[in-house]
Every structure is written in structure tokens, then in C-alpha cells.
Amino acid sequence: QVQFVESGGDLVQPGGSLRLSCVVSGSIFSIYAMGWYRQAPGKQRELVADITSGGRTNYADSVKGRFTISRDNAKSTMYLQMNSLKSEDTAVYYCNAAYRAIAYWGQGTQVTVSS
Image (cartoon, rainbow, N blue to C red; front, side, top):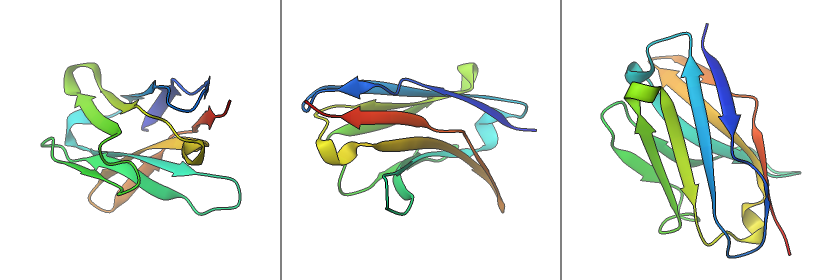
């Protein structure tokens, strides 16, 4: 069974930076397409960024140029570097792992951007 440990969420001021981490265990990390999603209060969960098993990345328009997704297969870990944070980035951020028709979700980590 795939398990996740997400970390890095915090309260940060507008313009600040955070790095989220997602450590995966219980399966072969390198085969999964990985992604970060977020859900703000009263809104649907949305894709922030994803990265294929081969390292190809994709970003939501709202975060392009500010966020960077990466993965370290040797450490079974995915990262999300978030710079120039805005209040609208406030949400619970979820780690996702997908392989063929199967998807797994982490428990989420809270990111709050506020002065």
C-alpha cells in the first residue's frame, strides 16, 4: 500500500517562499507520475503541477514562473518549491501518485499566505 508523508506547509507572508515535500513508501516511486493538487475553502481541488516518471513537468497557469516541481527517485520524494507566494495560493496542498488507472492521495499540508 502506498503511503505518503507530506511536509513543509506553513504560514508565510505574501512574497515569501515555501518548499513542500512528499515522501512516498510502500511501492516503487519511480514508476509513478506525481503531482501536487490544492484545495481552497469552498473551491474544487485543482492541479498545481505534475511530473511524469520521466521528469516532464506541467504547471497550472496561475503558478507558472513561481512554482517548481521536482522529484528525487533515489529518495522517493517529490518537491514543490513555491516562490512569490500570493494570498490566493492559500489552500491545503495534496500529493498525488498515479500509475495507469490507479491514483493515490496524501493527507494534505496547509499553506497559508497572509500578512
